[in-house]
Length: 107
Image (cartoon, rainbow, N blue to C red; front, side, top):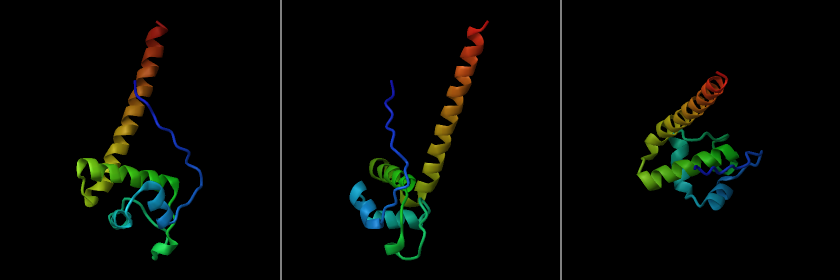
């Protein structure tokens, strides 16, 4: 059985310092991720940057990929995109499987 962790995606915004403190990330890693397009920021100066919960979750996933699998920062956007597509295909597959089961049970 798979355990899922669900986090609220409220409207909380984090500064770079707050993001790094709450996620235990180094500022250099976050800046590198921004440079490679893992997440986008809303201003030219790091003091103006604000990160949403979605960006926080994406950066945390990027860090785990980098730390655990040695995925280089330049490859992180592609890897994250492919993982997202894989998740979407799994959800679609599950939905189709449930529809098929419902149809088979009706026979």
